[in-house]
Length: 216
Ligand code: PRP
Ligand code: URA
Image (cartoon, rainbow, N blue to C red; front, side, top):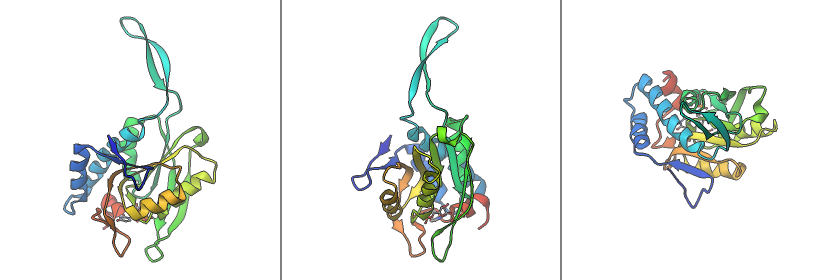
């Protein structure tokens, strides 16, 4: 199930007791790197479950061991998973658990800690990108700068049907993102309270990339 807010019509907040439980472990500062990685993968499975709820289906005839019957199959190629480097990489296995034929592109962005603006350093998508939906992944939507830039990079290459998957979102980032890209739905496991003076999400989980890769 997802929750909606009156303030952000394109925001979908995953509501599930296991997500709440796992998210609490993910946030806790004593959670070690290996567990952090596993939890991020598990939470990403739940986010993907909700984010794929409206994928189109077509009928398909199959033969069971007993009789012919009509089933359903996805009518499009599976989406393209687009992690924003680095921390988005931690969501790829979870998304691919439910979408095993999805292809993976990479968007290299880092947030300049002084200007807090995203810097681009890499971009690579599969050759059939135009035929696939785009699932951008990044655990953190803080100011929204990185996510806004990532969507912009896809749109300027003519890519459509974009959604953004994250684990924590700050209200400031959601407001900025929806103002820039009102056509792009956001799926998150939590809408947190706010940003602090360093543009970190509060209560947050700290630096997602550092916790995922042990570069603290
Ligand atoms: C983090 C995070 C997002 C970005 C969010 O990445 O993974 O990409 O910050 O902040 P924003 O919404 O204010 O743009 P970071 O820039 O720290 O790079 P890293 O993943 O390589 O550590
Ligand atoms: N990037 C992170 O990794 N964490 C935050 O809280 C904000 C940006």
